[in-house]
Length: 331
Image (cartoon, rainbow, N blue to C red; front, side, top):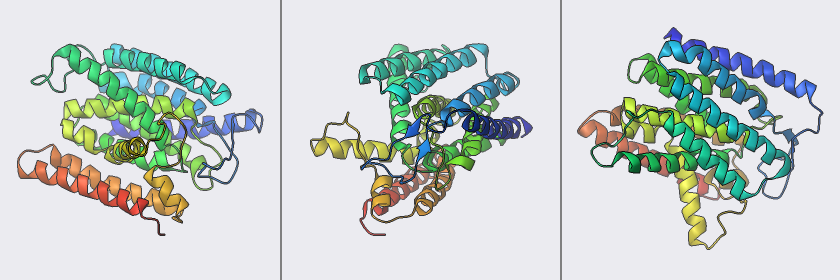
């Protein structure tokens, strides 16, 4: 238990302290987020979260990861991949880089991160050849990086939508359902987000920015990959299912409408809910409660027979219900 609590608390305190220092040191207009017609916020805020959280998470991994069983190959690869996205994200926050550079960096970072999982890491060895599975993992990680970035559009959304599932994953590890190293990874990310939440609560004074959402998406994706290996691939899919379902359903809806999917938009279910009158707190609390249900579903889906079927069905119904409520234009 201490191996999970320690990285969570250390990352939470360190991210809050470092973010406070950064906010007081940098100019007041540095990385300011513009308010546009697509914005889900009405107040000025700064995209500084990633500058503090990502270094804290990486440092936490190197301090607490080795005793928990994370090997040097994984730590080096994950750190290098996160650092690449951290730098690219910062440059994009400052200068709006071309999509080609963003995508190339995400593919490179994902390939490095997947390599760090090790040659023995397999999720579907009975169904897929090694190289095919590796390629799919890289693509899945790129997608998770982007959907985390897509879903980072409302105060506390990443904290509620990703931080809670990661905290639950860490809890699985504390009770022996997943490897200690997997739990340490999840606890470090969840702790960093907990410290960030102090400044990101409504009305937020700080956002993650691309320097935060991109590397956090990568590291979180790795955590869910590892959970899929340690416990069940169903558990690895169900815990972040709200983020996956909102981003994916929105993508298909935009494709069906003939939209250019590479242009900025504000059509995610949680964004529709906000524009139709839902308060920020009502949205993020709804997502948080759903994620607690998904935690139970993930544990059930790791079993066999009726428990697995029930876990998958309840997870799908719960996520579908929340998405439908968000997209219903009434407060």
